[in-house]
View 1 (cartoon, rainbow, N blue to C red):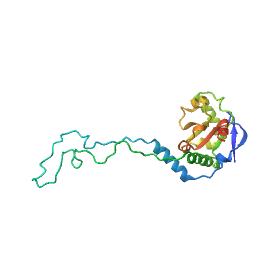
View 2 (cartoon, rainbow, N blue to C red; view 1 turned 45 degrees about the horizontal axis):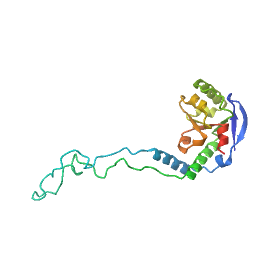
View 3 (cartoon, helix red, strand yellow; view 1 turned 180 degrees about the vertical axis):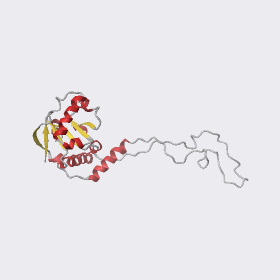
View 4 (spheres, helix red, strand yellow; view 1 turned 90 degrees about the vertical axis):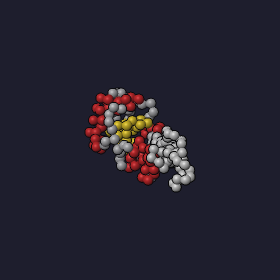
Length: 210
């Protein structure tokens, strides 16, 4: 499986062979969905809390006599059975929503998702991103040229740009443009990749995935 390599003038200069260990694995949509659910669940924080009967303000005086009234025995009006009383067995802000997955599973799912992009011809490589000026105008000009060379880019609403770590100029150039996400090859995760329609790799980044 191969991917086209372009320069910053949107000129196709070669084709690169994609590593089968990364871009040639079996695509499993079920495991991808599970990894996305795990990512979102692990980011979820427990904020809901309720007041139990010990937290509700009010008197602790017994409502009425224990015996002789013909009614059921009760303690204070702060009991959960009464309006204004405390909640019973409500959330206390310590709920655990996490869905743990092991490291090997996560790596395999990322490979599976990258393979899905590659099989759909949605992987593009840029020969040298480092010479791109760190300006939004430069990023717009570059993408205008790329959209003319690749019509699929013009139709994509979410574009992931994957660079090697430390490429601050690319981050600064694209950070103010809606629909673009600059990711690093060393910290890819299933959730970020699943949001993209097409992936643009720097040559350095796609080589480092091996």
